Image (tube, rainbow, N blue to C red; front, side, top):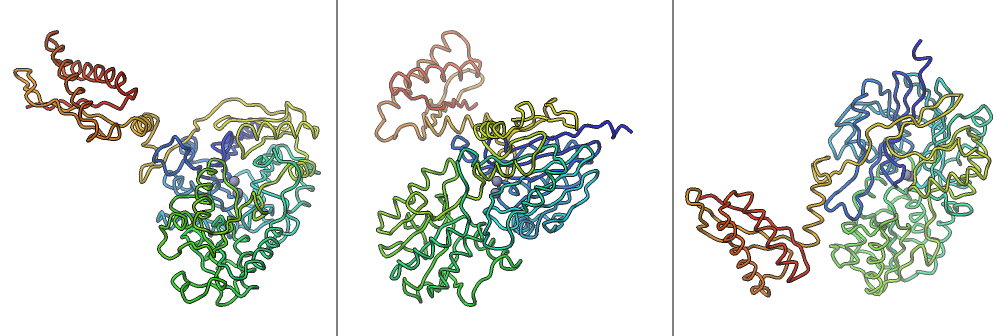
Length: 554
Ligand SMILES: [Zn+2]
Ligand SMILES: [Zn+2]
């Protein structure tokens, strides 16, 4: 009976007001389902952090209710946090074949097994009181889906990441008819992605890039061709291979993540590779430049990826020469622009021809632009809208766009992560919050690096460290050795002996002051030394290194 009165709750644990770590929770009565479980990449000020994952507190507290995790597609910002979620709780995972295949690769690295289920596009999975219907979409990775979630209060549609590609490389186009049918019957809430909402027009078909590749291959007769792209964009990789095959070139694939993705895609039938075209990198020397195509990771300028290492002459097997033509078939994820520029500059300094998205149409986005988003709105015709997958400005702009299409502004919810949207046929409103935020992963540590550790890392990275060591006799309260000064990352010690000698004198004076005041509490001594030294260094250098006084008892 009480379940009848329940309201449907929609809670985002990531992906709102940020790009990355997408995760949405849908709850009704005693049932919870989760959509996606992604990672975000650390921001510049998160020094030493490898990954950022969602805060799972709410899910851990309610784990008895969780009926399943449903995946829209195999991108990192949608599946990357699964190994970390599975450490906290066990949950059945549903996804299409390629998505599950890519997730398995990830779980293998973490040595974790999951209760996984492959679902076909068009199928509906029963999960508690929910029916989760998988609807075919197109995106920059194969086998992506949107969800229609059939709930006791109505139908919710979650777009996943999508573009409307009428001529995809493999399979059929996005299931426009199904979206229209759902819209006709009535959709209560539409959660629609917002990544490219600021951009006018339509995103071009993936196939257009193939045409450009063909042009480039034709005019690059005597050159070696190197293409960098996203490792999971198997249709892009397929198109490079198609051109290489047509022009009688062999293909070598570099980078572990790309090799894994391609292997999985081939096994599952998402790529067709002409016989004997793939060669190992060690075989490159047996071929001349015009017989070779290299497909590599590093399109985002990632310092450890193969392309960056080639650019800095740090790659063991591939040396860039003036006879190379390099295609960067990607656009920078916001924040990566500088890294990519650096790589392009280095490659060009080595004399290579470099083509990238600004110069030639060697990349198309995987995300819908305004006109495609409008089409989806027109088909789905939701009562309520919640823009998802975007920074605040994207969500806000999506709202404006939706208002222009006739959705009343009070029916559009720009939510923050952790906000609880309660919804039924009558209405929807934000009624509270649950714990949400970012958990930082550094090496094997999950969540142990927080604001205080990061603040110290920033301080050390900007101003360096000065350690003052002295030994004290506990009975006589006398300094018996030191003070000695050790510094790192502050000044070049060999050229700053005068400064450090003076600093030592300043510390001695501070110690004398403590003695005169008859206060030999260690905390008082440490505080005085720190304060005096800080003032002195600031006066002399306008720098404020982290100062660590250490007193040893003898
Ligand atoms: Zn995606
Ligand atoms: Zn995404």
